[in-house]
Image: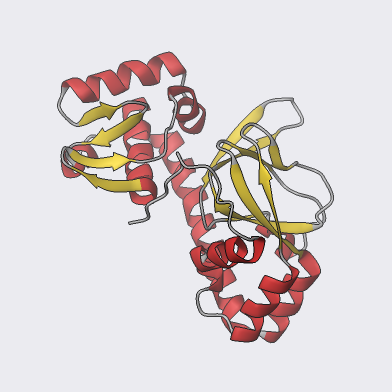
Length: 241
């Protein structure tokens, strides 16, 4: 279970220390050769993106791939009709813009910082060189892309075949897996997620999400701690999908 402390401001440690920490959070770099890891430390740049600002913009030319060293980002895609489709969230240790490694010349979606976030950026050319020289990185990337494909398929299935409560429960279970920390009342979702963010993610309205969360609380499956939700009984909640 991953613990993400999104309520803390980015570190003021030296840039190389922060980049090193971000690399160790990212599954992509867990088993790479030492030379790859050291090269990543050397070429990476880090910056802080304020909440609400873009980390990457759809249709901009791809120049780098981003790794979230700290914080959360919302992914979205704008359709030709002008509608915006929410694609999900990324947290500390997650890569952004990986479609560029499959040959995309422009970013296929936008990423907007939800919290003030530390972003580590790698030149695309550098990652392409590491992929040629380090099989472990290629295998890790393949695993990442398979996981992203599976997540997209699960999301489509949920939107097509589950009602609002089922989609909300699915969202909460995913949030527990990513941001859950033990709490005396159950499992605290440490990231502060608003009702509007949930609604956008599950294809509903803020009002409906508020009502449905209230029903789950009334049934003893959820509790609240400030702006954060607590899953009181995960197994019982899962049965409501």
